[in-house]
Length: 226
Ligand code: HEC
Image 1 (cartoon, rainbow, N blue to C red):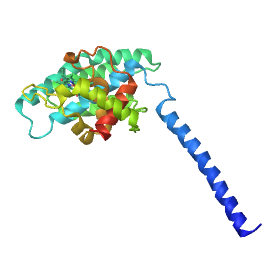
Image 2: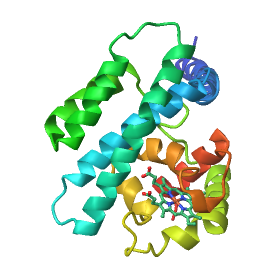
Image 3: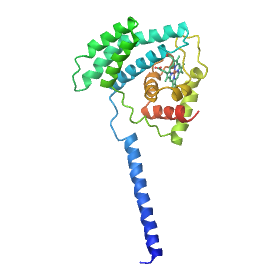
Image 4: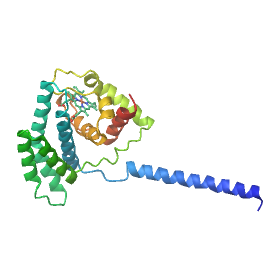
């Protein structure tokens, strides 16, 4: 075999190796975004509520909050803790495991939060979040394809922007700038807020949650568009 031919063969096999790698990569990409069964609705909701309460507790301890916003966050946490027990029991009921401590932990969480013991409340929350984690596969990492960016932009402009572009800060819980949240918040927390938030505001009139693919489009838009 001449050196030139050997070289050509090598280039050829490099090429086919490249093609094989491309196929494998696309299979992995398909797999990570679609080929798993998503978390059931109740476990997702419970995990979202836990993550949002934990995030609100983090925000509550930030410096420089106005009294109104502090009150607003505190009320929001308190009201979330009021119904989180029900969501938790539904989540537990449809999974096959046992969790004899769930009811007790939620009761403790409520009483510790009401007593102003944030550190203990956060500890209890962390324990719950470990047992009921949010399944973010399919959302993180997000592939910001041009189709998603286009769709995300469209939903944002048509549905979200009026309230979120210039939040009414006179409200106890003003809407946030979602691009800033996407850049500054822990990613998992932002995803949780997106999964829970879009139907969480009564004024939006969105009775049903957006389909996951629309949520992925919004996530791509907030993280990589705008
Ligand atoms: C009618 C006004 C309005 C519209 C329309 C609206 N939002 Fe909101 N949104 C709000 C307000 C007000 C809040 C803060 C409410 C609160 O904290 O209780 C909020 C909160 C959120 C949150 C945070 C939720 C949380 O748990 O912290 C997310 C995420 C969000 N909105 C996303 C969206 C997206 C995405 C759209 C469009 C599909 C949208 N919103 C449309 C007013 C609106």
